[in-house]
Each structure stands twice: as structure tokens, then as C-alpha cells.
Image 1 (tube, rainbow, N blue to C red):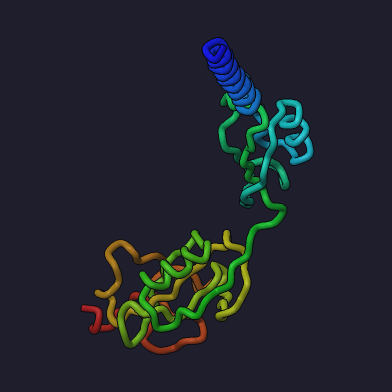
Image 2: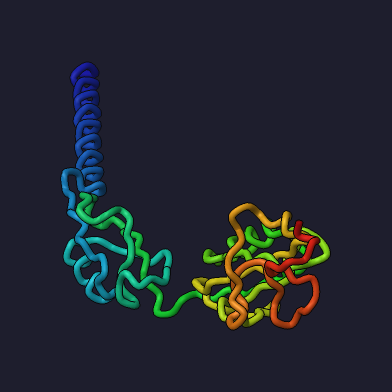
Length: 217
């Protein structure tokens, strides 16, 4: 009597193991949605509301991870997404979206007086400024920043908040004409105060404008 009972118990254990494996495989198939994929729609340039509708129809979720300011797409529209449009992903996947901001981001002009041009440029770039041009002006020493101004000559004091896309001019001191980097000389505009090798309008000494002074020989 014991042997049939033992065989029955072994058979039940094997059956239970098989059922457990089958249920596990079924659960994994449902959880991972094996074999099901959807194509990411092209939502580039669409308003956020329309992009959301298309993603919902594709059974995809999204998350706004960044914003930029550009004229390539309308304000508030989708500028970029990851993964890219046309990629096939599993349904329910989160798509990371970058939107175009309504207004350009601002940055604060730091104090750059008496630091080198390289250090000043690196500091501005780290803050998000990209359009930076040097203008070499007369000074007692070489390669020291004397100030920051706009192309129209307006001086920007430390702490001034301006859009990051604003063109900035670094006023960099040079003690002699020979100190100016090769090829950096540009015509100086006495009206706007921009351009090369001249002092700002509020300075009157040590001008580096071309003249017949023998000190330049």
C-alpha cells in the first residue's frame, strides 16, 4: 500500500511543478507583452497637446525632460524625442520629450573683471552663453578682461540678466599692438563701440587705434 501512495505523491508533485512553470511562463508573457511592439509616431514640431494624443493612440507614455529655445519649431512644440520617430518599442514605453520654450532662457552676467579671456569665456559658456566675441582694448596688462558689453556698446554690469542667445563682447586688455592675437584685429566702430583695438567710449588714454605714433613701430 505504501508504494502506490508514494507514486501518487510523486506524480502530484510533478504535476504541480509543471503547472507552476506554465503559470510563470504565462505571467512573464503577459508582463513583458512578448511579441507586441508599436511604432513611435513622428511628433516633431507638433504642439504638446497633439503630440500627447498621438502617443496615447500608440499606447505610449511620455515625459518632458528638457526645454530649449529655437526658431526651428513653434513655441511649445516638440523639438526632440528619444527614442527617435519610426523606432519600434514595446507598448507602454516612456518616450522622453524635449519642448521648445516660449521664451529664451536668461543668464546672469558674472563678475569677470581682471580674469583672463580664456577663463572668462569658459565661465560664460558654463552658464549657457555661446555667442562670445573678444574685442581687444588698451590696458596696462595683457589678456585681462575689462568688461562685457553688447554689440551696440552697452556695458553689462555683473548681475545683469540677459537671454543666453545674446551676443556678448569681451573687452580684453592688451598693452601693445603686438600683444593682439594674429588675425584678431577688426575695424572699430566709433558709433556702436564694437570692433577691435580701440578703447571704450569712456576711456581716453592708451588708444590702440592705428596712428603714426612711433611706439607702434
